[in-house]
Figure 1 (spheres, helix red, strand yellow):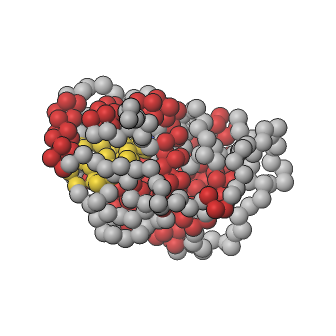
Figure 2 (cartoon, helix red, strand yellow):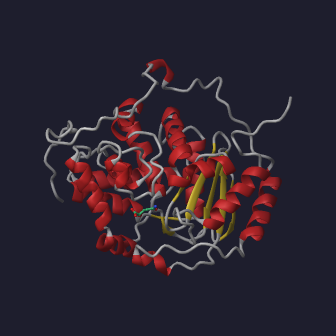
Length: 359
Ligand code: GLN
């Protein structure tokens, strides 16, 4: 076990370049009484009845199973072995009912979807204000592994759901040793899923051999004083969190925990506070699909998070969560079948947060 030196969260390095831009400019000054949601007036509804949910999932599965578009990720060599035909759909309701079709029980590495859940655990520890100030909540408009996004923003991270912000978020995980930090992440993500998650060691090793770009991003953040742990150790922790194995069923349960104010509907365990769930869902809405987050919100109308192994988790607040798994990706790194299936189900199950009808 490596013992890490006691490290206070850093101030900006003395010689760090200064930006002429404001740091995370905001017109939203902190008002402490507005942090926790008022549970008497939250704006959520109900899923259609179970028979309708089952019928619509089955119909969606059949409708998109033969889609051939997209390409399986190969920049992490172990991911290239995925079968482009794999397709799983799963929905967990906020009341703990589960519906699954196709390859919903096939394990795959969680990849970027871990970012949303590690962010939740860090916000739970450090709070709404501090994490917002350190990491940011705005979209970069650039690919998930962009270095330009850091340079264009005065050396700061913009949001926790692209690699720079995710590395900085992982560096804030509590613990005095690498092992303690890893245990915190592993236990926390397992609580979201309702059971202990395993690691795909092959994917981990494969990405550790090729993740020079992420190491570069971590080093760049270090040069600006915006990472609070040794950059190589952060990259290792982050790569390990991305290698945790989940199924579409696990992802739907993890998402349903966020849909249910932070309580896992399968185990009943209180994983994070309702205000933390709300914060995570809002950054997922603006950043969960990287530079395509605007298209996603426009078409689907719900917070979602994708990963390069082909998973997407989408949350209908108060109702439940839908997870899809299909490895072929579009140019932004989002699952092609997953996008189409989720958009269809959003429409058919009345999940779009922005839809209303005349009273
Ligand atoms: N581990 C991957 C990476 O950092 C995750 C990227 C993703 O899923 N978009 O490159």
